[in-house]
Length: 336
Figure 1 (cartoon, rainbow, N blue to C red):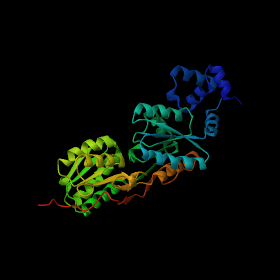
Figure 2 (cartoon, helix red, strand yellow; figure 1 turned 120 degrees about the vertical axis):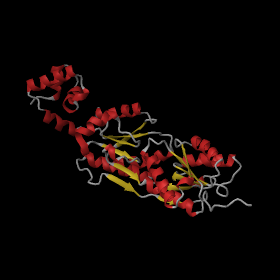
Figure 3 (cartoon, one colour; figure 1 turned 45 degrees about the vertical axis):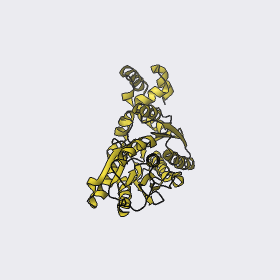
Figure 4 (tube, rainbow, N blue to C red; figure 1 turned 90 degrees about the vertical axis):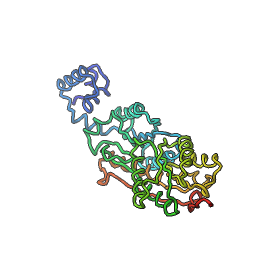
C-alpha cells in the first residue's frame, strides 16, 4: 500500500505538505497542490487513509491563548485549565496575544500545523486563519472559547451570565440608596463589556434610574479607571461600578487622591473577585467568577471534542456571586 512518505518523495515536498493538501488544500499553492494530487492519483494513495492517519496523530498539547497575560484574572483560569489538562493527559501551551489579531492568527497556526491538538481562546475573536477549519469541521473542530460568549462564533463556550452579574451589582448599589451611579465599562468591542453594560442598564431602568447612570469607557486597566473616576467625581456620583477589579483599584486610588473616603463618600463595586480583592483598602465588594472552573470546563469540552464525543450542551454558563465587602455602604446625603 502506498505511503505518505512515498507521495512526498515523488512530489518533491514534505509529508506535512502532503497532509495539508489532503486536509487543508486552500493553504497550499495551486502548483504544489496539483503536483501532489497527481502523485496521489498515479500511485493510488487513498486520501481517506491519509485522513485516518492524521486523526491518529496526537501532539498531547492544548494551546490556550489569553489577551493579556499580565491580568491576574487569567492566571486563575490558566491554572484551572492546566489541572484539567494534566488529568486528561495533555500539556498546556500558553500564548499571550496582547489583544493583537495578527498574534492571535500566529498562535492559531500551531493548530493548523498540528503542533497542538486543540485551541482554547479567552478573547472575543476567532482567529481568521481558523475560519475555514471551523466551516469544514463544524462541531468537530477542536476549538473552544472561554470567558467571552458570542453565539455568532459558532464554537463551544464556557462563561458566566455577565448581564445578570452586572444587574446584581447595580441592584446592590440601588438597594443601598445610591441614585447617581458611575459605570466604567470595558472596550465596547468586547461581548463581555456589552453584556455587562446591558445588565447594568436593565437594573437601572427597572428602578427608573437609567438617566442617573454616568457611563465611561475604560480598558480594564487601573490607569483608565483612575482617569475616568476623576471625571465621574465632578458629576457628583455617590457610587461607581467597574467592569474589573483592576479598574476598581484605580477608582479607589482616584477617590483617595480627591480627598474622599470609600465607602463613606463613594461606594465602589468591582468585577472578578481577584485573590487580592479582599486585601484592597477597603476590601472590595465585587462579582465573583469561578475562574479556575472556567478553565477546567473549557478543557473538558475540548477533550470531549478531541475524543469524538462532543457535549450536546456546547454552551456552559457557570454561576456567579455578588461578594459584599467593605467598599460599599449606604448613601449618605450631604449635610445641610
